[in-house]
Length: 126
Image 1 (cartoon, rainbow, N blue to C red):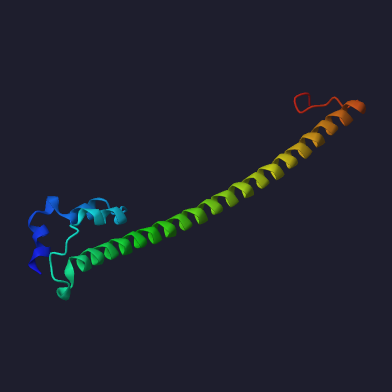
Image 2: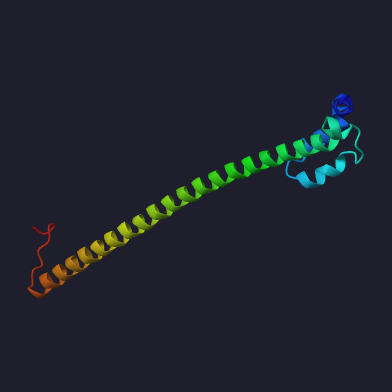
């Protein structure tokens, strides 16, 4: 049972440390553990410790993936809201441009009508 704790004495060379340094490489991390059973199987065995550690790492990876998925969904919703605001802004600008065009046409027609009727008065000539 104490043989499995021997890796704690040398943390830099520990197979578990290699798991923490490469959290997404769970399957190949098992190759860092010794293949031989250094503890009798009746006491849980070294393989059980390895599998427990690998399962814990996989759970952590899944939790990270879920968090990243949640963040991605939030960012997607924010992006959709931004795009909706942009579409609304474009519609408002298009409507404003149409109104300006109508005002321009009205002013142009007013000037033409004034020229046809011979109205040459302007605010500066009054």
